[in-house]
Length: 330
Image 1: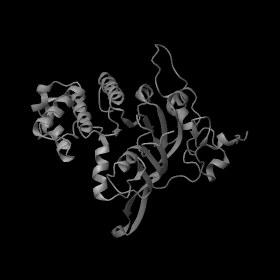
Image 2: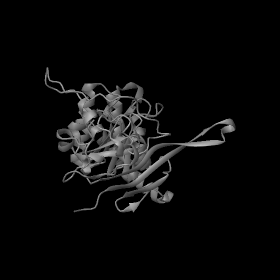
Image 3: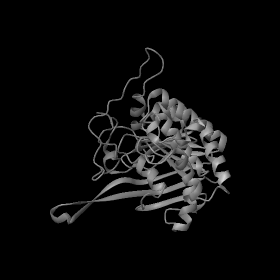
Image 4: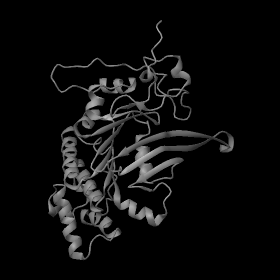
């Protein structure tokens, strides 16, 4: 078995928060608190969960948009979480990103031609001006936009077209992994489908690996290979798509999936209604972080934190119910 392209080991990111008189007292937001996963070449791993669970922070930590608190990020066998700037430059060519908002992620003063040419120039990919022009026009063909649009500026495009430009910009560096941070959440339903289909086509054509960060489980089901479910800074379940949508094991995963509408007219699920709100990441609960909302909670959940353990051939779950524990009656 070939080694993974990306390996994340016990990743933590705690943001300091100053409070009190003269900001003397410090607290921490435990945004990501011990996350581990792998992504193989050509694979799509979807990172899902409620807003605020830490999934976008994971993506930005992988991209080194900020320093991590602890843990390891390993790209193709080489640690990049503490890499020198010279190493990071090469890494940034291999790992690119498509941001959530196509309206703010493109420079409004630049023409599309310059937006796409910038990473090609930065990484020294083009051999000449003619080669640069060939590459820029080929990128427009790849994302199915007309070549004559190269001289327009971002405000002249629709949201879906802008996101295609964002994808083309990511492809310009010839990456191996693309982090898609809520890349379709700001788009209309029909445009979402077009962008997802485009990403799948590009993945097959270029052998790309994708970290697809989303809260839209219907989209995730359509395009992913594996799913990692996050809750309050931790991964609670990891499984292949077919397993997690057919037979989820963690109570939180079951609640999330019960809210996904079915495509058949008249069909409906039995929704799992969770009580209360998500606890603050500044003061997360002891034990299992989901125990304050879990319908199956028992005493052990309140004091002992569960670890990810195998619940099947390729399914991993962090729940005490998976190690033979039973819920006390009464």
